[in-house]
Length: 435
Ligand code: ATP
Image 1 (cartoon, rainbow, N blue to C red):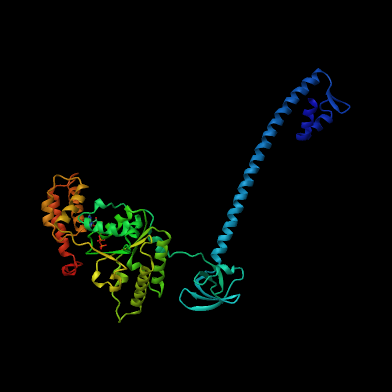
Image 2: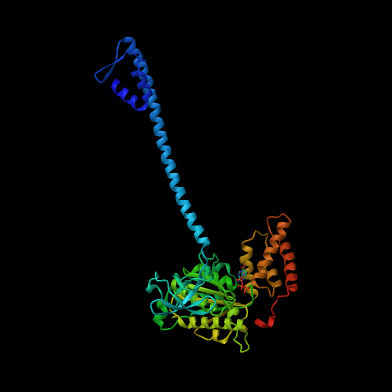
């Protein structure tokens, strides 16, 4: 035992060994290789010393373990820092590299040349980076071009225009048919034209007719066109792609047409789907001979839209709903059967309609026995949005008077406010337009 301890001592405390050898511990003698104590005093000394050595050894052992753990931690940290530095180096390299131009491949000429159209429309014959696989280079694909030589550097994956991908509504609107008042007939027509072919196409096959491809909703503003389209989207399990017509009216030649193509391609990929184009008059206005270059681009977009409408099979699971306030200026080509087969008018609500809308709106409010009859008869010429404004205004009156319930008097004073605002409104459309 003593021998082991001494051996350990030799490893960790060489100075102590010197101390033994130099005779400062005179009672220790060697018998051959073995160091033995020489007498009882000497035994006591050596035991105390041994205890001290054991303690030292334990402390040193713990220290070694601590240092080893620390070393491992530091090595791990160093690894992490090396990786971060590599990533930052790459980022710096990317930030320093010049931007590449995006173009479209038009044709391949021989092994190493190609014809490309850059984003500003100019066509160039350029060389092709030899590391690009030939099979990936297909006419029409998007490529990146070097700024100086316009050589093809890389082939880009086909991407959708962000405006088109942004149009896809990931979250379904939460409008239900019950929230729409006075439009039961129109809702039935729309569901028949949009939902039925998507849900039961076999019915149309059996009867041998083609279902409508699209529906055009028209009528004055604020009467619930957007609301109906949202309710269809919420009710059907289809992808809902919503776009405003003006978003398709682009500045550069061919851009609007490309977006329409991408819109329909996205709808086909995500089918069953419903495309909703609000304010379609922005691209669907009558084509005139005296057009500026901007008008001609809008006309090209319209022609692409017509081509897409003609191109898809009525039984395809893509349906299109368009809405407009200005059906009078729409191009006849859009209105002919086979495109928007069903034109549904969403008129200003009549007395029955206003009653239904007010009932829906007031049922959500906390009120004191409101006479709907009086409100219905006093709101002739109000659209759905006006009726909503009336209810909001009445609610505001109650809040102003620190009341939790809306009274008849609140509705009466709100009625005066809304009528006054309507009279002052300069944006009112001529009544005969929808007459
Ligand atoms: P625009 O042509 O200006 O886009 P729109 O016809 O699409 O107008 P919506 O946006 O659907 O009108 O309606 C505006 C608001 O008016 C809705 O949010 C809703 O609160 C209310 N509203 C309109 N019509 C109705 C209706 N029939 N039933 C209940 N609420 C309605």
